[in-house]
Length: 218
Image (tube, rainbow, N blue to C red; front, side):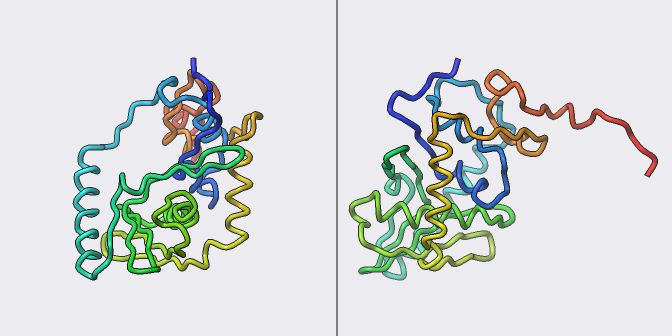
């Protein structure tokens, strides 16, 4: 049985991004993870090749780190960038791939594979918001952002993290931090990539149900 967190909701940035841009609709998945200890609930086995992805990702991070260091920037990588932003209702955690600084300017960088999604940019915007508020060595710096893909990049100006964006983020975090369970919207597409099993979510849509139904002549 899933065990409730004793120190309040704990939310990872990556749980927010697709919800903020409408790529996902089921807020309950993030609510459940935020309110329960990660070791206490069963996970659906992953078919993703984690080892191959990690090797490729590490190589990309190293190449980008070298690129910025050669330009005279101070570069912070992965675990150096781990943060926990504490609010009244919840904690928000994350770990961008790279933070680069030169005097009073900086860039938060995340490296992605595959095709671009709006949620990738939102992930970096959340880092841009949280980093100067949670890590003392970066306090007071207005960060730009960058999403790096194979062959192209997306630049995000500091001004993108405006009051409307912060308000939308705050509203979502408050819904996920509430004691009342968030909206559950099971669907074949979202449930396919959700690692919460039917033990904790009996309403989840199993993949084999997608094939059930009548075949019509069109």
